[in-house]
Image 1 (spheres, rainbow, N blue to C red):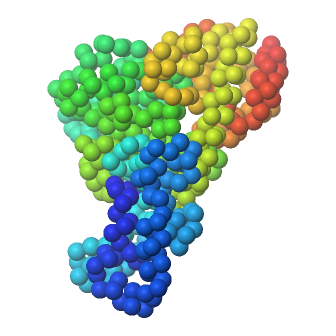
Image 2 (image 1 turned 90 degrees about the vertical axis):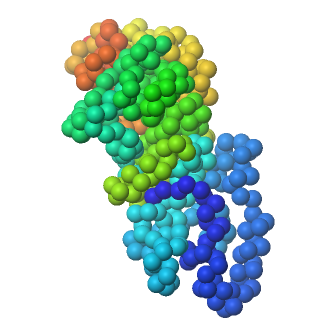
Image 3 (image 1 turned 180 degrees about the vertical axis):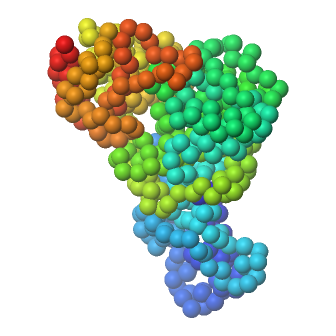
Amino acid sequence: MLCNEHKVYQAYNRNGVKKNQKIVSKAVKIDHLKFEFVRKEKQELTSNNNLANRGLNTKLTRLGNNPRDFYGFINPPVVHASTALFPDYDTMKTRDQKYTYATRGTPTTDALASALNNLEGSAGTIIVPSGLAAVTVPMLAFAKTGDHCLIVDSIYGPSRIFANSILQRLGVEVEYFDPHIGDGFANLLRENTSMVLIEAPGSNTFEMLDVSAVSEASHQVGAVVMMDNTWATPLFFKPLDHGVDISIHALTKYPGGHCDLILGSVSANERCWKQLAETQLTLGVCAQGDDCYLVLRGMRTMGIRLKQHEKSAIKIAEWLSGQKQIARVLHPALPADPGHELWKRDFSGSSGLFSFVLKDASDSQVGEFLDALELFGMGYSWGGYQSLAVVVSTKDRTIAKAPEGGRLMRLQIGLEDTADLIEDVEQALTKIT
């Protein structure tokens, strides 16, 4: 389920055995012309390493697969596996082949990990069964009894539940901090602060953090900085370039993009890669080839989709800002947003998720609004092609509460025509009594 250097493929033949072993020489004798053809094709093929100066969408169409590794097919195969066979006892004893058991990876999972390594600029990536697992596995990897852990108060709700239950049960002290803390963050750090978990913009309330400043201060006490980067994806923000040690992603969202899978990824720098990988293997938290294949397929069009999500979301957010029923719109790409300058400095784009405050709305009015929507479905998650609307609660938070003046609503803007979505929200607002 993990891939450190995708170049490792070049050191093995199709059976996963090193090229200098006797099984290869036998194969060449049997089919000499075929192997010569494949070797020549590999030399002529442009590798992923040569994509560095290409455009983003060009990269997305190529990353994670060398067609000549699989007889010229553009997409890698979906490998369904548990057992990997060894050619002889010596190989089994030394485990001297690329694949030894499916929990340690398959060509399909490695293809996805390789693509993410390229996008994240990471030393290695693990693939896990969900976005929440992408949060919990690294937390288990780097927190121990007696440690102090800092978490931004605007974190994803299930991450808070894990920290307040499992981490505290293991003897880790958890402290939440204001996403607007600014320079005061350094005062919260202690000698035993081992881990800092952030999200920018914040979940549901979309506060911005100075990620570089948080990372720099945290490293002064040796803390590992983790960031949930699901909102921006590595297309619009690369956490490791801003000092973050571990980038967390719910692949369920924009990389998958079609509301038909649940998957997560964790990408680490050199400092943290080995410990993260060892923890994942020890826990046995792995992903299946079918889901990895679907994410790879979704990534091919992710750049184009994200641009449409961004364009529609900003237009709808701007329109909502002028409606009398709306007290406030929470979207960092809007110039009036408190976090706009940080977003503009560090991010290259925005996604399709934002919130707004429905002015002085009662619970029944919230229901009337949601029930009146025709194109927006009511459902959790986001990042797919269909627009969604939900009411948001921040009762579990200690600091980063929802803005006053009404009920907090969250919109996921899909790929429908923007004019149709505005028309749908407009007619729903008229139904509030």
